[in-house]
Amino acid sequence: MSVDHTTRPNPALSGTWRLEPAGSTVEFTGRHFFFLPVRGSVPVRSGRAELGPDGVLLRLDAAAGAAGFESGNPQRDTAVRGPRFLDAERFPELRLTGERLLDEDGLGLAGLLEVKGRATPVTFTVDELTVRGERAVVRAAALVDRHACGVGGMRGLVGAELRVRVRAEFVREG
Image 1 (spheres, helix red, strand yellow):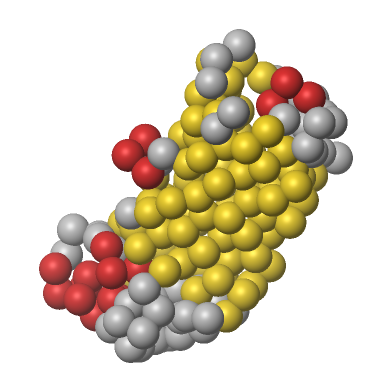
Image 2 (cartoon, helix red, strand yellow; image 1 turned 90 degrees about the vertical axis):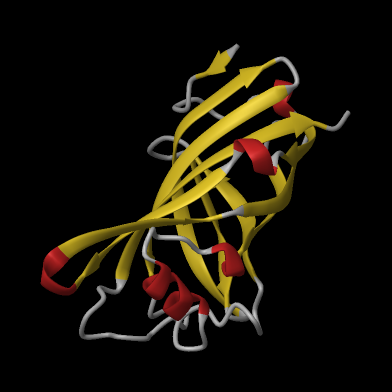
């Protein structure tokens, strides 16, 4: 069954869903010096979503590993994991806590993105929600201001705005 993302939340989705890290990704695109695109990813660690009997999101909590930041450039990756950017040693997780589903102009998720211990409001637009039996896949995207999240290193060389894309695979827990 595929769910049209322009409809209201579906009661058939009610219950608790566990995020499958192996089937999930968090990727980003940003701009570097001379407007060159920089792409990378962080590994998904864990997550859980709970939907009520009316299909409305009650709770979402997901974590990604800051120490696993990868862009394909080892020198850059080490710098971004360091204290000037993600400070992965002191803050090993990036967390997303979902607050509510939005459906005025399609399906979205409003929540808080926690980076380096600082929670910043973020809104993800859900591009796809596909449910097949006990599995669900969500694809969503958001624009994130890294400076608002406390990641301010190299302000003159690295743009503030990151486009974040998420593919989250969930399994129903019962």
